[in-house]
Image 1 (cartoon, one colour):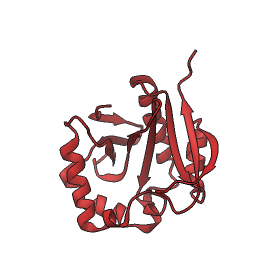
Image 2: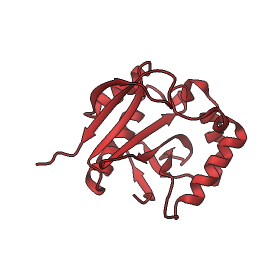
Image 3: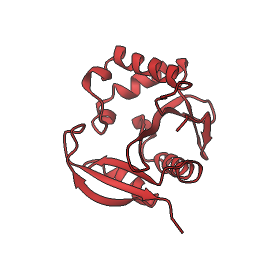
Length: 175
C-alpha cells in the first residue's frame, strides 16, 4: 500500500508527517498516558528516538517500503494533535493504530478518524480485514472500535504489549 497524501474528516486532516510536526510529536510520544497503550520499544520513546522515527517515516513515503504512519492535524490550523497509520500483516489484513494528545481525548475525534481510515482501507485498497489491537485497560479505544463496527475477537498475548490485548476486526462485506 502506498501512503496517501491526505484524508479529511469533519474536524481533522490526516496527512503525511512534516518536519514542522517535531515538537508536537515529541510531546505526544513522551506522554506515558499515551504510550502505555502503544507497542513502542522504550528506546524509540526518547527525544532522539522520536526525531529519528519521524525523519525515517518522512523519507520512506516515496520508497518501495513506506512506513504508513501519518499526522492527525486540526483542519483549522494544520497543527499535529496525534498520529495514525497502518501496518500490513498477513492474509489481506492490515493493522490500524491511532493516538491523540490527551487534551483531544473524549471529543469524538478518534471515532471520526477511525471511521475515515476504515472507509479508506475497505473501499480503496485490496485489504479485506482491518485489525485493531487494543489494550484491555484502554476502555475509550474499545468504545471507538465498537462504534465503528469492529468486532471483539477476544484477548490474546502479544509480545509487543505488556498486558493481554483485545483483537478487534472489521472486514469488507463480500456480497
